[in-house]
Length: 242
Ligand SMILES: *[C@@H]1O[C@H](CO)[C@@H](O)[C@H](O)[C@H]1NC(C)=O
Ligand SMILES: *[C@@H]1O[C@H](CO)[C@@H](O)[C@H](O)[C@H]1NC(C)=O
Ligand SMILES: *[C@@H]1O[C@H](CO)[C@@H](O)[C@H](O)[C@H]1NC(C)=O
Ligand SMILES: *[C@@H]1O[C@H](CO)[C@@H](O)[C@H](O)[C@H]1NC(C)=O
Ligand SMILES: *[C@@H]1O[C@H](CO)[C@@H](O)[C@H](O)[C@H]1NC(C)=O
Image: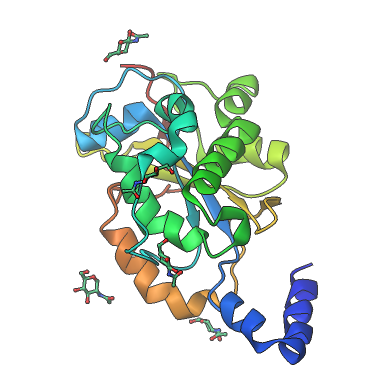
């Protein structure tokens, strides 16, 4: 399927060079990132009483801050705000639009290279739509992965997600400074291709090389930089509600 779309691009090159230029920077993968508020707030020292996985972001695999002149305007997503507050809440500054503004500049303006996401309304509503479709919190619950004082292994959690969605997620943990042997379940990424069908998060695209340096750099300064891929051999703590 990937090869097919590449072939189409090649064919299109002979018809219209503009088509190819406008797609030259196009991303290949969208990463729907969920975080567990309790873990996030332990790391960031915030307070949250939310007991469901919330949306962190919808991130294309290529590019950061693609268009700084495309200003965030909350009134363009006014109809989405009730759902945004519930599903994509700003855990650090509740009742502000800071987080969405940040996500829009950093990731939304890059996602907008696809015509399916080329407005703030399209971008944020797609994020919400994918979040509701994936329904990660219910799926984890349904298959027995619930916040608990008992530890899980990373393969248990991964197994449930892989079995249900049929693709590999990327699971990230925070490492507790008090107990170095235990890691806290923090973020779960579910990936999609440009047609919004599920995709293996591990799938790499050759074009990713070009932006790799930028991506790593930007990730390093991300708010959730305390999260890293979970250690396969250490137990995972999925902290219950505060
Ligand atoms: C969570 O906190 C908010 C305000 O911080 C409060 O309005 C709400 O009732 C709380 N919810 C629960 C379930 O405690
Ligand atoms: C950046 O955003 C502005 C405002 O929406 C738009 O006019 C401009 O065409 C965009 N630039 C690019 C390179 O997409
Ligand atoms: C924000 O969007 C609203 C609704 O589309 C529009 O009326 C308003 O002029 C915009 N504000 C700015 C500063 O662009
Ligand atoms: C991408 O990087 C990998 C490892 O650094 C390298 O083996 C591969 O050839 C590169 N691909 C392209 C298309 O540059
Ligand atoms: C990373 O970002 C910083 C600050 O934006 C910049 O000064 C630095 O050159 C970047 N490093 C790389 C390797 O891109």
